[in-house]
Image 1: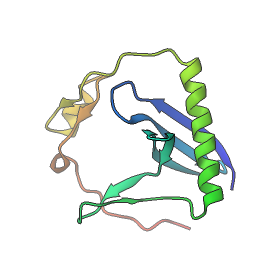
Image 2: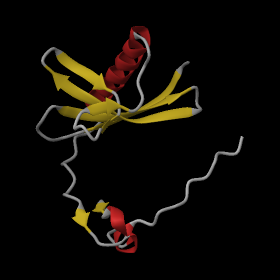
Image 3: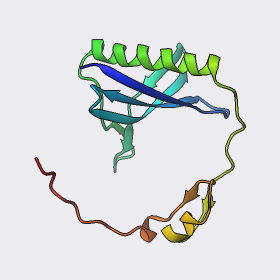
Image 4: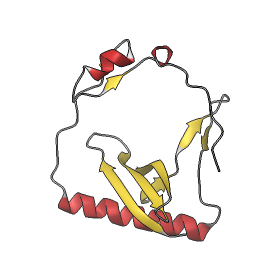
Length: 130
């Protein structure tokens, strides 16, 4: 397995979250929402996670062994440091605008919109075609 692309978005606000990354593997599979976090011992990468019914956060996707975790962390933090030194700093985006429907969100324009879950149509799941 080879990391073929890393995209890092710097987060410009107070707090421990410093960035969010997406990693492409073998030009075939992408993992989004890896978080770059400032910990007590420096930066580290947290895997994408979801809050379980018991209130605990559980990783959605994660490396199975330490060598792979280290490979991900080193590559992502290298890219993060590259972004820090080469990218201009922009002001944080305006807060998301609350809208009622998906159609209304399309009229918001460049601003990010938050659409209530009940406003989004459910699409039936389809089996992948292999």
